[in-house]
Image 1 (cartoon, rainbow, N blue to C red):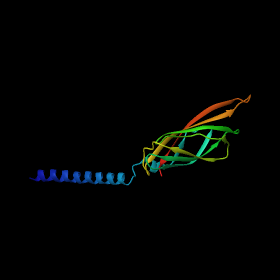
Image 2: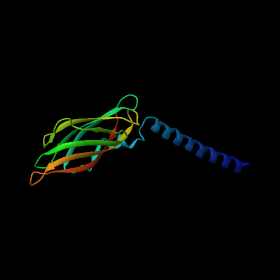
Image 3: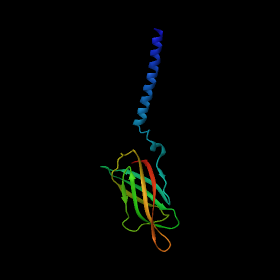
Length: 155
């Protein structure tokens, strides 16, 4: 009889411990503390020749949204912006209607997004491709591109 009681106490102790762990993990998940972007914050990576700052990913209605960021060209010369393409948690394109020169002076850009597949407060991750033209010796324009990643919490 003593062995049965010891075994039952052993199982009950571990049962309560496992139940408490499940409740704590569920609470952390419900509070959104398991989302990595909440711990890492906004991250901007891999943009060659450009400085990207202050991104803001906004979720709209019916799968729409926008991505805003400050962009400056870090080379000593200037370049002409051809196109900005965004893909990932949303997709969209910004194409200038007039000639826009990229210089070391920062300028705010807004890309209107469609196919936004996240909700407000969720983590987002987008690939941003910037196409730009640089005038080389002889006056010829050459098109270059750079791809970078922006991630964070959607607002």
